[in-house]
Amino acid sequence: MTGRNVESVDWLWWFDAPEYGFARQVLQRGVAALYFVAFLSTMNQFPALLGERGLLPVPGFLAAFPRFRRPTLFRWRYSDGLLRGVCTAGLVVSALLVAGLPQLGPPWVPLLAFLALWLLYMSIVNVGQTFYGFGWEMLLLEAGFTVGFLGSNQTDPPRTILVLVVWLVFRLEFGAGMIKIRGGREWRDLTALYYHHETQPMPGPLSRQAHLLPKPLHRIEVVGNHIAQLVVPFLLFAPQPVASVAAGVVVLTQLWLVATGNFAWLNWMAIVLAFAAVSDPVAHAVIPAIPADWNAATGARTETPLWWLAITLAASILLLVLSYWPLRNLFSRRQLMNASFNRWQLVNAYGAFGTVTKQRIEIVVEGTLDEDPHDGSDWREYGFKGKPGDVRRLPRQWAPYHLRLDWLMWFLPLRTVHEEWFYAFLGKLLAADRQVLRLLRKDPFDGAAPRWVRVRSFHYRFASRKEFRETGNRWVRTLLSEPIPATSLRRPKGRQR
Image 1 (cartoon, rainbow, N blue to C red):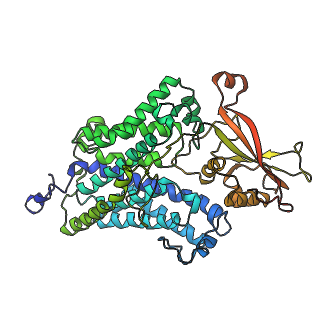
Image 2: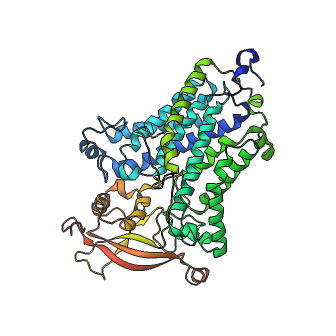
Image 3: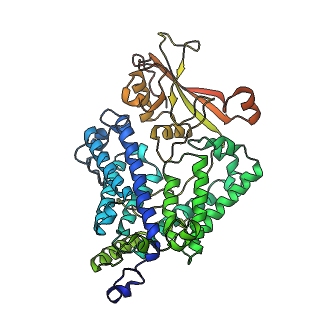
């Protein structure tokens, strides 16, 4: 109880958690770092995707909904300059939190900083349409709101908030596990990993090696996944050191997902949040450089003002009340995946990959400068940064950075290529729009406008070790169809539905 005024605050033993000082540092700085990545991703991509001249312009979206009720700073006015201002503010605030500067002041200072990040990013998500329709957006919002109430170095971490962060991890992991058990048969017969590494939205540099592991190991992977998501989350609420061991299992399984794929900040957020269950003594036992008593080692004060107690308990009660709907959803036969039950996107339902795609279908966009296009024309393929294209190219590791265009390209063959944003994308390629071309890895025309573009679909599979030795190709692809034939600005073929 170092640094504590025993007579005045000893009765707060149930509220203060002095043994979780290191956990608070990881939670606040880690979540802030992921906010930094999210704002950076938005700064670089939002204008081309959703800006004034984007694929799905925000001004037109807001005009179509005059009674738009979702909280956003852009409700009354949007401009690309204002968007950049919001992102710049988010980058500055998140960088300060990563550096730990607001945490040096009174507890309300980091709270206001995290609430600012929450409101700024929610303003973006709520007008982001399909490009921001991912579960990790609401996860980032909920995490930012919650960890703000962990306070500063002038107080002990509030135990109620730590428990609510563990509850968030539980919903994230157990929700994903239940979605899988209720989903495709491949999760129940243990064959899901026969396909996942190959067909996931954006493979990483080790995905092919993971896919080529023997099938018995893939079955063990699935069993391990079920244990990690359906059993281990309950142990996060157990006494120490069991809770810390459970958190370690979460961290290790998420690191395997980081190594074998690109899921933006989803896995990194799970890793950061899992530290809510790691106490200082256990962290010290694993890594001796971490003090066994963080507050004592860093000279942090541990007095908890009554006003801060009142604010934190009010937030805890709010989040506890909002937990009713996601708790009911977890055990519902019609479990929702990545759903929010309130307009502020707090205490949400999470889950992913209830079914696993068995084949990888890739949409390939090509252009030509020929006046009269035909199969013998000089068709050149556009290259994407993360989406598979060139069969010889080693996939890159992008996570936690989020390539939004590449992710939506994965969904096209699962839904339909005849999406509004995709036709807008083709139009931008025909116009050689510089903003859109900057989202790509390779413009085969070096800034010139093609006369025609076409869309073809291919079946992709990872090359075997023998095929790779013989050809140097990491992928083997087979042409399937041409869902959008040659189209130009002068002679558009029109949408095919």
